[in-house]
Image (cartoon, rainbow over all chains, first blue to last red; front, side, top):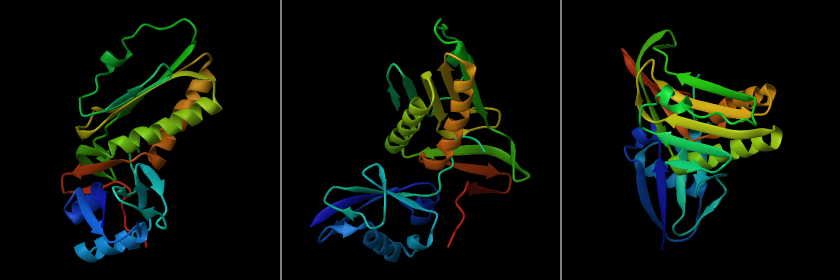
Length: 84
Length: 146
């Protein structure tokens, strides 16, 4: 088994109701696969949020990126720092 | 959280930003320009009254992404020092959300680099802003796009 940590921020954190979850998987899994699992578990279709980005271990990544043991995946809603 | 060296300083803080504490520094003699940008929280947006803001951050990654912007600036302009402090947590109207200073030998470089920094910050740095109105809240930019 491998363990990955998933972090949520801003609106998706409120929608999911958690800022962090841990997921146990049988084998290394693509980001897209993990998103499917989360979406199913929480009833929220994250993949449909086309303006969302993802980061693996603090670096932006594609949904085709593979997550391994102890990796951290962050779900990144559209950023809005600074001023308008 | 604070990252710094002799070329730049980055701080993300929940402490209230006081401009007098920030700019009350000795000026060096080698730079002829220091551009200071202050981001101030407005009490209105979308024609609604803003009662407060809430800034949230993925701090470790935000520092990395800010460093990337700063490195691009150093590659693009002749800049001697950059300091950025971004507020997190609750911020009230009229309070500072961000302080940026950019020092250079001549003014053109520090003006251009300051504009570039603020523009880029909003594209890649994982900091999110929630606005509180009299009659509701909104996470800025987070509209469902399908």
